Image (tube, rainbow, N blue to C red; front, side, top):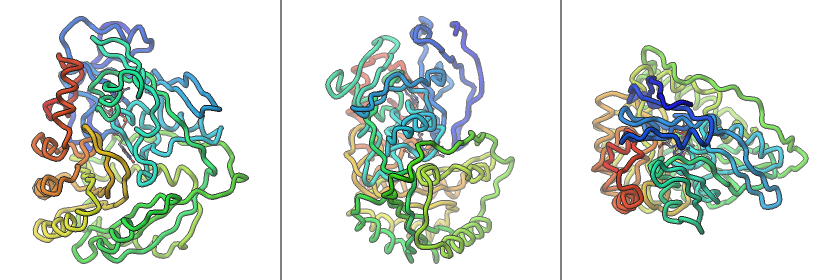
Length: 443
Ligand SMILES: Cc1cc2nc3c(=O)[nH]c(=O)nc-3n(C[C@H](O)[C@H](O)[C@H](O)COP(=O)(O)OP(=O)(O)OC[C@H]3O[C@@H](n4cnc5c(N)ncnc54)[C@H](O)[C@@H]3O)c2cc1C
């Protein structure tokens, strides 16, 4: 890499934002250190799968870390692995699964980078049992333009470690990460399906479910008031059969999701048809079936067209973490607004998350409710009302998923927003690392 940067256009995954950016793709550690001596801001980008524009900004030099994708160390006895942050989840698991080990907190798409999941404190399907990726991070090697190279862990530079996990790339470039691996007793899951007739029925069953062997989540309808909340609860349980382990991850090729259709195919009519087809298919399935690891942990693999069908304006995902005590009343009020505004919702799903809230992390113990909306004025107005509900019920809306969220909502919903901001400023008073989202959130 030389000191000259290149220019290209980048879009956020939800298509809400696009911009020309200047980027550099270092290949060596020396090149990573070799930033121009200007006052320019920087931000590190992973695989750019965040729904919101958090890995780039038109006023920041974007550091693309994808060349840093090696496995640096693996200790089978300690079940620890050190990797460079640009490695994808897929390449990571391809290696660890050969030893029947994995990270149960990886998010639902295989081509996301390991640096990206640390910087967003991502979670996987089993977040009701295993919490977020924070639980598996042992050490981080970070580079900061003025603070230099730093080793971060519970025992070394703990304050910066805590700011970096879920810190949205604002403390510097995560170059390497050491993870604690979890043993995997099988590569196949037994999946159970149970029908739910309403949102109340679904919430009751999901909240009550305390079995630590199941990854539990739901698919619910939101295509009409009459159907709202009906659907299915899915439970994945690892098969207890060591003999069935084959140690290899099925081959996957990366699909280009960036080419959304030139028009939107999702509207009230098509969503209703898609929901009916899905509902009938699932209802006719056996109550128990066997699925492989990829089908369970990467639900979007093979279903990438779902995103493309939103067309050029893209979509809005609202993911909200609500305490178990408040989620019932939150959903009642949500339905009251739903009756009035009739928003267009393509996807609605629930799962539990286990953890403790801090800083800007999407983490707490509660129920995680996710909705995808088509991106239009009516739905944005509806979501502005839902922001108010979040503030009222102290619910946490995801900054990574919802690019629409404003400073007022984030400041009021994230109890540790100011603490994060103060500590970040204390660590880097020039606030060098900046993305479109961080500027909007005044960080
Ligand atoms: C289909 C799909 C399914 C998903 N499923 C889930 C899910 O189940 N659970 C979940 O939690 N999330 C999920 N996500 C969101 C995704 O996990 C996060 O947005 C993740 O951060 C994306 O990683 P990335 O490599 O694409 O990073 P980017 O989108 O490129 O960057 C994300 C953030 O991480 C920072 N960052 C990236 N790399 C580094 C680095 N090396 N050093 C410092 N900062 C860095 C960036 O600055 C930015 O703030 C999903 C996304 C998609 C598209």
